[in-house]
Length: 414
Picture 1 (cartoon, helix red, strand yellow):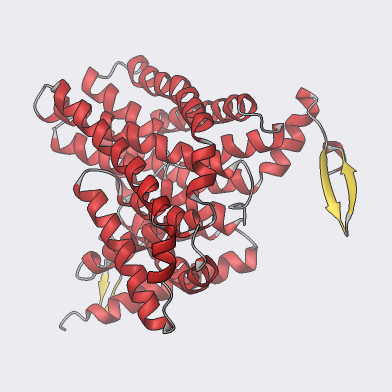
Picture 2 (cartoon, rainbow, N blue to C red):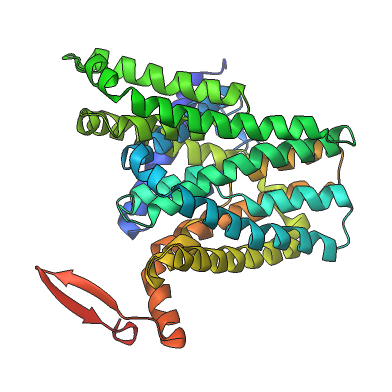
C-alpha cells in the first residue's frame, strides 16, 4: 500500500497526545514522557499494513516541525525577559559562565581520560558533557512557570554563554577530528562572529523599540502573526547561517520584542504554537535515538551522568551565591541546567563522521536520554531537594506566602 505521510503525522501526533494525557493524569513533566515515546517507536519498529511506526517517510517533516518547536520555546522564554534586564545582568552572566566552565569542562575531560580513550575522543566527550540543552531547559522553565523567577536570568545567560563557547569549541574539535588541525584564525573568527551577532542584535533591537511599536501596530491578528513569525524564523535562520544556534537567534528576538508595547498580544498568540511544536521537538529527539544501541556503554554513561549532576549542581550553587542569589535560587540554577540534548547529539554525529571509537555513539545516546529524563525531574523536585540538603548544610528555611501572610516551613516539616 502506498505510504501516506499525512497518516504518519497523525500517528505521531496521536502518540504525543497520549503521552500528554498520561503526564496530566500522573501530574508529571511531559518532557521525559515525550522523549520516551519517541524512543519507543522509530526505525526499529515493525511495519504492519498502513500503521508504520517507523516514521521514515515523514521524518523530514517531523524534524522540521520539531525544529520550529525549539524556536518557539526559546522565543517565548525571551518574551518573559527584556534586553535591558539581561544587559544589567551581563557582568554576573560572564562571571557565572566562567565558573560553570571552570568546573564542568575539566570533569568532561577527566572521565574519558581515566577510561583510556584517545585525545580526539576525550575532546568530543568533554563537549558532550559540558553543554546544556537550551530546548529542554526552556521547556521546563515554561512548564513549571519559573520564567519570572530572578535566577532565571542567570540560567538564560548561561545558555547564551554556552553558545559562544560552542562556537569556539565546535571549531576546534571539528578541525581536529575531521582534518587533524584547528586553525587559530578559524577559532577566533567563530567566537567573534557569535559574540558580535548577539551583542549587535540586542543593541540594535533596543534602539529600534519605538519603530517596532509602530510596525507591529496591526489590527489584524492574521497579519500580525505573519509579520511576527517572519521576523522570528528569518533571524533564527540567519543565526544558523553564521554558525550561531538558531535557538539563540529566537531567544534574541523574544528579548527584543519583550520591550515593546505589544508583548502581551505576542505571548497570547505564541503559546499554542509553543506547546504544539515544542511537543514535536521532544518526540523527534527520542525518535532520533536507536534504543538497540544503548547497551554498549552503560557504565561510562552512568559515570558521566553522576559527574554531570554533581558538577552542574556545584557550579550552579557557587555561581548563584557569588551573584548574590539565595541558597534556594542557587539550587534551582544548579538543577535546571542539568539536561543534555541537541549539542551532544551533534558532537556524537561528528565523532561518527570522523571514524572515532564506535562506543561514542552508544555513550552519547544513553547519556543524553538519561539526563533528558532526569534533568526535568530534578528541576521539578528542586524544592524537596533544597529541603533535604538544607538540613545538612543549615540553609535558611523556605518561606512561603499563604493568603498574604508569610508562613515559615522548616525543611523537616515538609
